[in-house]
Amino acid sequence: MFQHNPLTFFGHVFEQPLWLILWLFWLAAVNTLSLAFLRHREGRWVLAAWVGNILFMSCLYSIVGYTRLLGLSHVLFWTPLVVFLARRLTHLDPGSRFGRWVVVLLSTNTISLILDYIDVVRYLLGDRT
Image 1 (tube, helix red, strand yellow):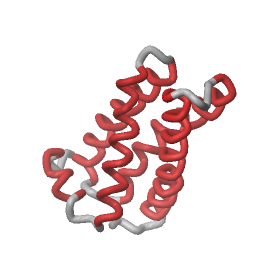
Image 2: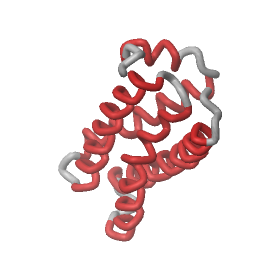
Image 3: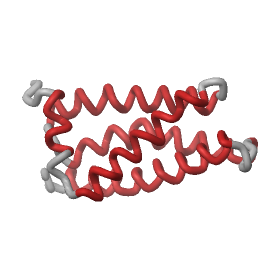
Image 4: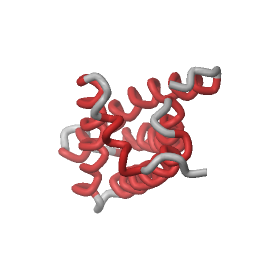
């Protein structure tokens, strides 16, 4: 069942085009910043989704390898997160560090989700790369 060692994941990441490597590091940085906002409910939800995403993607990678299906992890964890955060925007101070972080995170994860939904659909249609 488990065919791929999760420790080899980053080897595949570093074989990708530079823009994708930089995008993945941006995603990691923006989501990890949730640690700075744990006193806010939104920060705790982001951290929970981020940890869940990392664990699920590690398991998924172990099974299917570095394929488009890895986007499923973001789809499952970030879709509800993005909906939650979008609904909370009117309750946040857009001028605060926290408010600006939520807007940046929401924008970043939404862009990622667009790409991830495309990747998952392509995988399901037979593109196994």
